[in-house]
Image (cartoon, rainbow over all chains, first blue to last red):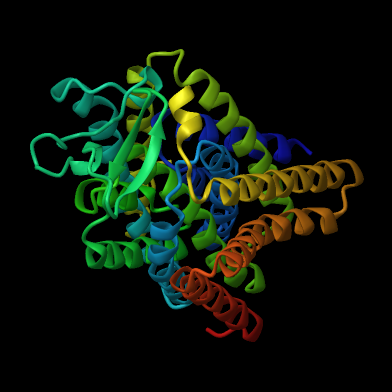
Length: 297
Length: 98
């Protein structure tokens, strides 16, 4: 029984930190389960996939209510992401555990870097305000000439209502081929490593496809759920998802995610980001070392 | 607030259907997990995972039906493509193709 309590606590931690910092819980769940709980990494990835799916469903529900999700673009990109996810799920049978540890270690380090850029570096350099504070997080849109989503000419453009600025924002989706290729890569990573892949999809949609950050985040969230479905079916039938362990982690992730979304706007997240980054770097280095047969802990 | 009301989003109704679907999915999943904790029966845990998988698929079906009613051919084809890929993943899983 105590093991379930630990798993719920792991889920709460992953959901809480994930929702505050804006990364998926998978990047925390897989290292904790595989390194600290000594679970085989394939099972940890299966568990993480279901947890990611639960987080996506929970968050998407709210984004649907706010009318932020760009369903059409999401579904077009989803064709490629789902195909990538199936490829990744099939590949997991051929890839040895130590290579998976190495890949995940690298991914963890990259994720730590992106968390830093998103939460600390941008705020310092671009003086943008976070979504919690009431405005878009729209890095570099002014400088790259890509900011035509706010123009009044609405012909052939998508729109959404921005509750912060109390105006309707217009944008036109561009560069679909870039979106297709990055979606496929994000899908492979999701199927292979059990993460959502939002840290690839959101910047691609925002910076290269001209989709506003809020819409990109909502659309990515919607996509993550469907992508995880494709991988989860394969993991489930291969017996890589252990239902009771997964259920406990899912409960924790849902509780932690809800708590995180309530507190995210009320606390200074700078220190939390730094703590999380340190944790991710330790996990990342340990996983890379484990790929070579060494262990930090 | 008034401006928000003025926006006539084509997909607002679809979004509320999807939001409802996801909410029901989450509620059923939570109930299944709690029942599993109480009864210590693995069946309920499996059920919760299956419901998590089913929820987005039902969402896709709702979207498909919505676009069929609206007769948006492009959107219908896109959703069918996604559903076919998901069916392929189910088939790969069932055949346990390694």
